[in-house]
Amino acid sequence: DAMVIQNPRYQVTQFGKPVTLSCSQTLNHNVMYWYQQKSSQAPKLLFHYYDKDFNNEADTPDNFQSRRPNTSFCFLDIRSPGLGDAAMYLCATSVHGGQNTEAFFGQGTRLTVV
Amino acid sequence: RKEVEQDPGPFNVPEGATVAFNCTYSNSASQSFFWYRQDCRKEPKLLMSVYSSGNEDGRFTAQLNRASQYISLLIRDSKLSDSATYLCVSKGYSTLTFGKGTMLLVSP
Image (cartoon, rainbow over all chains, first blue to last red; front, side, top):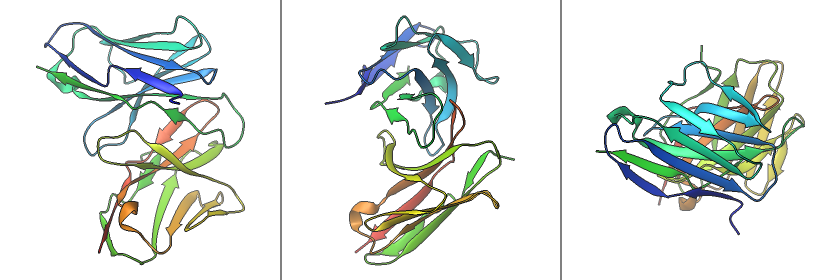
């Protein structure tokens, strides 16, 4: 059974039209991450939550926002998508701290901006 | 300097070959290290964790050298199904940093 679930798998949105991607987890992990991955590039961390504490990466554009209403759910909001925001968006979870605590990924949402 | 660096490849090898990837990291505070495998247009999946003493899982061997700040992955007896991108990952207390990945292509 999938432990990190992202919806939808594929999302097409219009230029400038707000879009929300969702992620849910059944692992009860306290850390949740959002990554952006463009073709042939490494996943780039946008932000992460440690419980309810939000940690934004310095170079994440203001256009990207996130919400974590509870342990299980986390949302990525793109307020005004541009063509350059087309990418795979990956949600991941892990346990805070500890040695060798790997991250578990959802299947990703592939965003197309038209 | 990038935090996690890998040779992007591609590494083209025949079936049955042994291939090794290296990865260097710059953050000496990194606590844990992993190798993930990513197939085209799919999410990364954990291949193995990397322990200081080195660890082996079937045809795969991972090693960590903290003094030199590098991690290695050795794949023996390559299979066609090993063709993928291999991502080196360092983990701090709660952050994960990915390398760009090394592409492996195994041919018949």
